[in-house]
Image 1: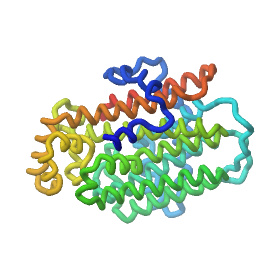
Image 2: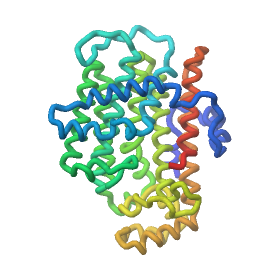
Image 3: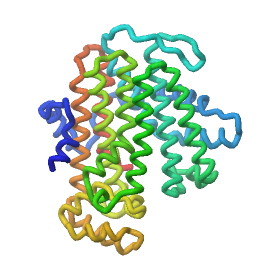
Image 4: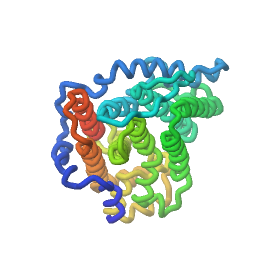
Length: 376
């Protein structure tokens, strides 16, 4: 439990500050807010979409088609990560020292901090989509975002190359920022993505059944990208180390909450009946938080996990134990705790009376609620 406590209660965020959100997050209703978080940055998201499509143009037609596959209109997704980063940019619009003048991709100097922060949103989305392309190859997936996955439509080789191409374009954009700290942060993210995926593929029996190992892997695979990107936003704005760490804590805890709810939805889907989800993880032999919590209540489940889930009977047996346990409930509760910490990080930012800043901060807190109440 000490390990879990250290993962849940992050450094620098007093428990009293986060406790104010506990009741807020136990409600199942979406926070009433006249401003939808996504609509607040809708115009910028549209421009970002156009910019991304321009950035992934390749000389070879086949590679160009593959690279832009998930950036086309209608299949670009909700753009959750860019939304968070654009809102964070406004939320951190505080008095700062003069920031160094950036240089854009064409070598033209510009003093527009917002433009540089938008570039972080673009880079983050390219890294994210690249990771999806590679993950789908590793998982032998055949669908993504309601359409055929790229590997299913164009083959594994082109899917891998398209992911590599997106990472290379992200590197070019990242280098153009001329900020070694930000470059280091985002380079570490790519390392974390590879590390997390490798951790998932090469676990020992004890590691598969360890909540500490699972949470570390989840940070690498899901939360590192958004947390370090949020920190990069603060750095580019010239903010203090303390403010940059609060931005990091928001992204980390939001990312962990997001993945924990994903774990729940894999079992429940949009139905209240257990087992109506996709069961994708368990069928691929991936043990997630609900099963780990169920194992604490029913140690005999460990033998089923160790045997593996190639046999459908073992999947059914694991679901039976899960149904008798509080695994789903405890996973949701853990997600709520991380969402509380994300909200507390925003609440701990230096006070600001500007309406636009306050509105963006409220939207970031609203997103923590949306993450834990979503049904898909």
